[in-house]
Length: 85
Image (cartoon, rainbow, N blue to C red; front, side, top):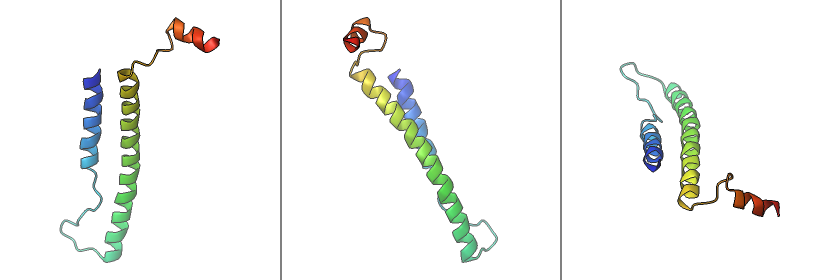
């Protein structure tokens, strides 16, 4: 289970590493305004992607924390009976 979670984090990190913040023009010259507009668009898309990836990693880390610390599962009858008291 831990290996699967680490692979998911690794996949997120690889995706984050592939995010483009600034795309340079290939052949055609562009104006400063066009370049700035394209960079702004790329940065907004990158921010959305980063937010999504970091949320995934946080959920995985919380899952790791609970599984490593052996917190009682909700199905444990003793745990449930202590809550009801």
